[in-house]
Image (tube, rainbow, N blue to C red; front, side, top):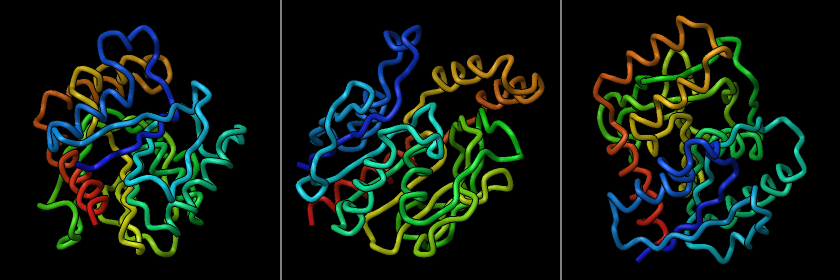
Length: 237
């Protein structure tokens, strides 16, 4: 039985939390659909929880957040230090959206707000052949972001990519770190909520196209399963 520690870096708006749960709740559902035996614990930065010693953890997953990794908030630098220690220790670690960007920045990559604007709705990503983690030629996953990894760290291999997000999935050379920009933990209903939250912020045509796109098939379970196996199999080693 693997024990996965979810680092909560942002919170679902209260208006939606009762129906959809927190981000850790979403990840727990994703993980348990692949591995019902996994043990989940949550460390919530917004609630003031202290970061644990990554050397004492079996596996780590860092969630999304509304913040930017470059915002200079007082908790970002300690989290980057946590990431570097986990990476050196080869603690199995996954980052999603903000987590994807934070890990890249902590390990020497460049993250900024993209001139391409908002990426919302269903996005399709090409899969690097024989990457050892994600199968198939492409995956369609819900996205919700403006920031992107512009330049990955030197020891990161891009395994998911699209024209909009060239570095949407990174597999790191330590063999224990995987990050993705899109959200396999989101169901279609919450992905629609993310579109609603961009009304008045993103161009109307972008939001409208994103809403329509969510009627198409999604591969959330496929990517979520791959992430879960990545964490649980490496934690068992």
